Image (cartoon, rainbow over all chains, first blue to last red; front, side, top):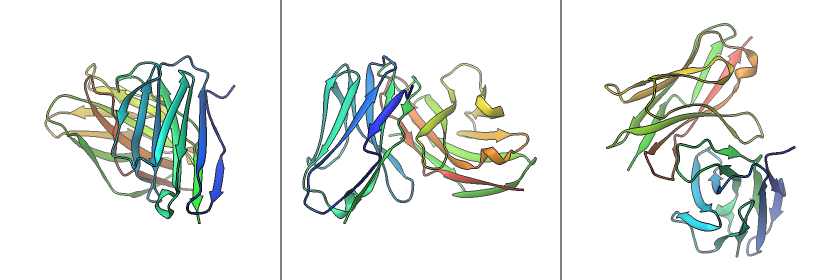
Length: 114
Length: 113
């Protein structure tokens, strides 16, 4: 069974469109994250939720909106997509909210904006 | 604010040779330190972590790292490289009690047959 899954794996879309990426974890973890990995492999935290509460909200354009319907799911909705949004987006989860806990990553969603 | 610097974006070693990947951190308070590995087209996987117990930390796949406060370093080593070690390696730091991991820019490890 996949611990952290993301859909879709690949997403190709045009500038100006709105898209969503879904993430689910079956580990029973309380905390979930969204990361962005750019073309140079630099990985940066975007958001984190603990038991459906937003606990990390980095400097991210407000076109990005995370939603956590329950603690097993964390979705990312992106409005008005721009070329610079092209990246690999990773979802992760951990047992607790502090960084001492191991984070388990999903396989990533490669977003290409044309 | 905490940060990590990984020296060498690309490292190549021969199969069977020592692997040494360098990581230096900056933190005003005692840090937590991590090494993650990313295989091609996959997510990241934790190799090992330092959270204030023993300074020499052993991880999976034969890797280990030593926390050296005097040098602000947390270098990753493996005595004998295997072809399956070829991947991208990320060092990460956080401040104790903080929720956020800050990653380095990564080091791509290539194994030469």
